[in-house]
Picture 1 (cartoon, rainbow, N blue to C red):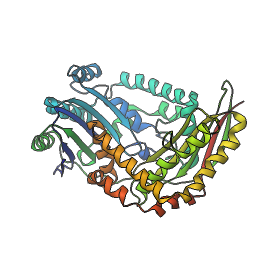
Picture 2: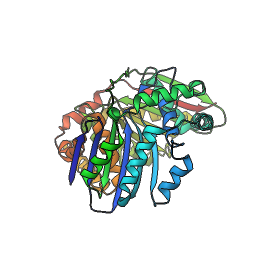
Picture 3: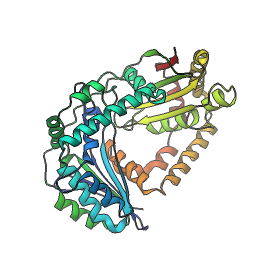
Picture 4: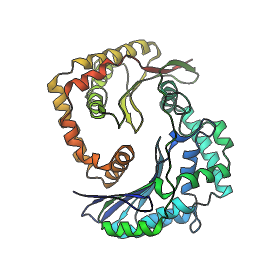
Length: 396
């Protein structure tokens, strides 16, 4: 593995992992996401992400997509709490093209009024879709119980806030945040580092530094919502877990793997395999720079909600008795899973980006060491957490 990192004089940070296959995965990310949205403008970071692919000073939205797809490439964009990212995967001979196009998108998106209104309608429909989909709605509501506003509000925003965001507000935020000192360029694939550096030097001008300005206030709560026209009850339960900046972040991964990660996990075995209480039994470990969550989702019968909740909490508490042998076995499972993920350059690209935003991209390459060094008592200690949030959506 050959890894390179450099912060240019213009403020841009470059991450590069060299590979031999003639493929490149390239991402450009702004250190700006939904965590930065105020309550009044919630959804603006996500709205900007939509507009990034809707036309620049030199390309229309269709020309952007055709220029990538005609080269056999794929692309997409996403907004998280702390990042807005556009990425591409292409044959490596298109390195120059990909970096130049990403720079154009991040510097010269035009925010055409007609495109804004079309995307506003699309986002409003996206918000409605998530509300109507029980599997998505429960996570939106659980987040509101786990964090105070505005952090706990969905990154999509609300019907009210998205309806009011103006073109001027979008452009103002875009110009404030999409500047070289706030950007990270990641390349994984067959390329030369000096070529990447030279391209980035010429494409981005020096900019001022930006200070982070968001606040995470954790809380807990319980709520039940009744809805017509559904036959199944949906339950989501969440614990505050270590963030990516906390010492126990790797202990949290081991805990999650044993407790809820897949079909061999404890809650899957107890709730579905042994008792047949549910078809969908999902466990998710969400970790970013400033927060972490262990979240459980169960779809079951209305009358079984109390029993399912009891089982989840019982199994969570039982994790304090996890054996050293089980923990060591899980360490090897996680290390093997990470090895398999190395095959996909896009996965590596995104993981490098996330680590860089949290602390330092080089942390990505210390994964095996960090997992091996986790003390069993650090895993077991997470089972001592008493507070949790619970949201249930049940048939009316």
